[in-house]
Length: 121
Figure 1 (cartoon, one colour):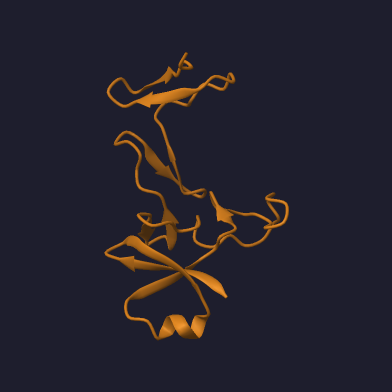
Figure 2 (cartoon, helix red, strand yellow):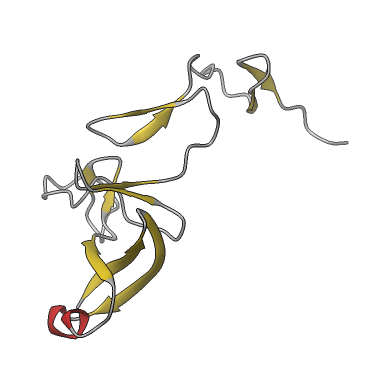
C-alpha cells in the first residue's frame, strides 16, 4: 500500500492510502507521494534519519499542497509573498535568513525581517 494525493487544478485535495490497482479505479488524478520524503530527502521510517533512499516528488503531499507537474513535485503553499521556492529541496526560503541563536522568531512580511518572539508572562 502506498500514499496517493488527489490533485485538482494543481492543488492536493485529499491524501489516501491504497494499492495501485484501486487508485486506477478512482475518478480524478491521483499521484503517488511518499510519507518518508521531506525537503527532497528520503528518511528512514525507523530512525527518522536520511537513509539514501530515492525521494519521491520533493515532499510528502498534504491537503492544500501544490503539485508542480513541470517538476513533478509537491510543496506547501507559499507562506509569504516575498518567499521563493528552491530546488532541489522544494522548500520556501525567506529573503533574509532567520537568525540562528536559540531564540524564537516570527517573520514580518511588511518589514521583510525576523522579529524575536518574547515569551508570554
